[in-house]
Image 1: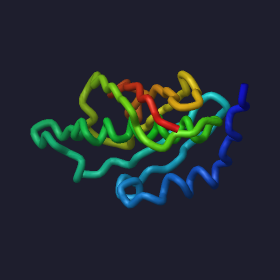
Image 2: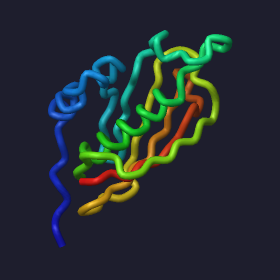
Image 3: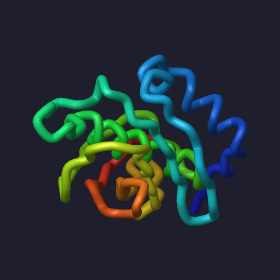
Image 4: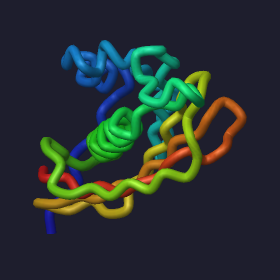
Length: 137
């Protein structure tokens, strides 16, 4: 049985996260990394609003945040994730303002496929969206 990959340190993870221009545009930052979770934060941007009547964020942005958090959670906690193989997202309430906080946890680290789940919360800790992704290593 092979050993899991070594965990990535915080500065390495930040550098990996900020390589992509899309991630930079989103303004992603690592708020916390523990032995069990990775927490990413994203500031509010008016450009992500898709329903100006209520000022809510586009679901695709929330989905991208779930996807990225899952992928980087696996990389941070000893796995290897390079691409998304499958993803499911549930929307629980509109994201209408303030920073978004994404909490990722590993479900399974595998040799070829790993799984993570993510919750997105608003500044008050209310659940906005949740999802699960499978990632190819």
